Image 1 (cartoon, rainbow, N blue to C red):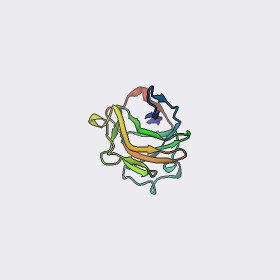
Image 2 (image 1 turned 60 degrees about the vertical axis):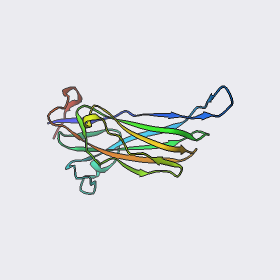
Image 3 (image 1 turned 90 degrees about the horizontal axis):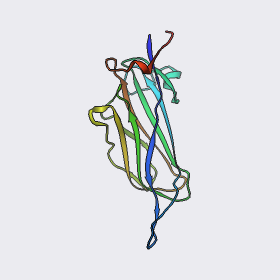
Image 4 (image 1 turned 180 degrees about the horizontal axis):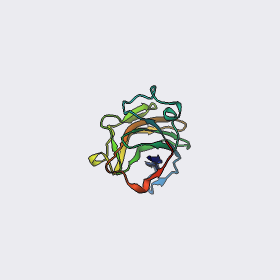
Length: 165
């Protein structure tokens, strides 16, 4: 049986500037990000009907064609200054299909206002963009989630390996 080992990378665009007459001083920002995933084998949006191994969020999962992953991104400001213009980008590979309407803000700290998430064009092969207004204060954290489905017809062979059933 062919299975996908799910692994994802993530990056975030942030800016934090200190207002001074001239010049503008760039501050270092410390936005920590952690991307994990759980397997939703029947793509029903529920993890209660999954095995403990599938329902546990981790950085690597085995996934069969036609199954879904629930991606979870935890973000936090580990710096000393508020971060403004926060934008989290989570990749949706070509062989995965974003499930419309699944993007959810699970936890949003006060002072940070989420805009509507923007899925990649055609639901794959790009980034799901999570734009925010306001600022993420030092020590504050939040969480976002969305679901993707492994497309059994366009999966790339080099992302698969043989796995015992």
